[in-house]
Image (cartoon, rainbow, N blue to C red; front, side, top):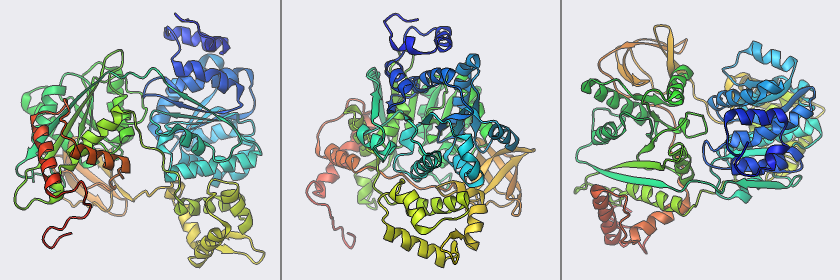
Length: 620
């Protein structure tokens, strides 16, 4: 099996060993070697942290499947929670391949899986269940009394892309659901977290399990590739490009992307859905003008799953050059095979996100390649002093500095998350039919995830919910769903711990292209760019929330919902260090050096090293 001695390999079930042989592996990766024994023993939680596509799924599931081959019981024995439906589909393909020879059932469960398939699975629960937090919430609400039987023999809880849950509403929701599952099962289940990027691993371990029932084994890859090639190109926008009212973009960036990337497979992260559509369109038009096949395709969350899957499969097959212009949808661990390089338009928002993206590039012994393209407005007498500090450029340099220092954002874990607590209150009422205030506080707060909520805050929250008719209290003190609460719980958006705006469905010739939020209205006869193509709006059905499109020559990118991401304080501190320094990183081109020099000039001109407040005329 291996060119070096592997004790862990021989702890695995023989059929799992044969599967490894068939893959032609020369050895287990270090994380796979270290994970086998603690997972098989089931006496500790486990965090596996390693780069994208380094075998984390196999590190967890090779020993899990080996355990299941010797311990077969009725019901779901593994609960694996993933943040994206696409990740579940990818996991299903990979895990089912291992399970075929050992006759272990693998069930994907999310919004795109048919109700009939879900019902069949729940009637005869078995093996491994792959699910999103929202679908798990739905099980609690709709099948609360049946969960004990379905999960009575649960042996493992796996959380994929763990870093995406830490400190978020979905993370709080998931932790609360796991605690509620432990409560009805009357036992604690070993937890396994998989993540490509974690800042403070000890903090992550505390977030994985807030109560000290199990120790935590932290497994971090020691074989991460450090060969990195960097380039940061600067662009000066003399006049804002007004060809699209929602975007100011440099056609020079698109020209460079076309010249450098065409003919190979790469990921182009554009930071927003608007930018994704804009650059997909302009690069596609460049292919048409050059008389070559199109190699540039958009990938973002508002596109239909069929369109996204086409791009993912084209990348996986690797038979044709494919450049995916994307948002964070391709940052997480969907298997898309190897890409030659990563292009970044505008500054990344986080060090961990940048590392995550880099993990997509440079496999099979090749170096990781990152090209960052930063555009800044030309300075004139009307320029804002913030623009003069060249924040996009300086932030990019700061992020690279911190990446090279191997610093990553620590998880944010001290927020109250009252909105998620309200959702969990309603979910628990649906699960049990009602509860007394003290019971709810003990379940969700005192013994549950929301431990920083004391009984007084909880009681005040219930009082407000009662005044709003979200909940009611019977004469015996039982708290039940109120009239407004029923409308909230009955809506599909209840299962998500984050806002899900109402959307129009975009269609052409009976095919769904994707969705647009209703706060981005379109009218008949208008022209849009969507799914990398140009369309005319033929009709808008307000009642059915559908928009019919046909191909057109003109188009403009529509508005999408969403907010910018917070930037961690340490990044801002490093930006100041960049401005104080006189060093010019070797990866900057001439324009980027000019922009950096301008930023440092104005930083010193306004004496910002020691002053945090600047008075400019009537502005402060």
